Length: 156
Image (cartoon, rainbow, N blue to C red; front, side, top):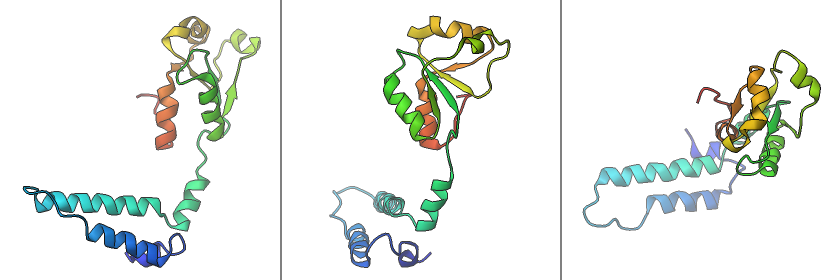
């Protein structure tokens, strides 16, 4: 892989070469450290270098992936890190933060497939009607972890 070709346009040549030289000529290691440990550290630094300066094609591909497109999410009042913060995160990943549900949802026998409920133990009473209808209730960790990995892992 050609370093210059893959990073063209995202970083000037001189600043890229400075970063690579800094990685190559790091400070002297303390006595007793093995060469293998130095190699591993250098590889880690290079991975960080590449992840910070992705190729334009890679960035375009990542922008095409729309996470939670149109997914309705009900967030109960006491959910941590906070109802407003979670609602903003849902909107940021193209979901729809729902403040409350209509009575028709609770009267229907079948629970809506496109509804995700994020709650906590403190709001158990609020979630009972949804659980009785066959719905599932998740902690905010599902959303937070899902944003990081771009996939909701319900079984987790």
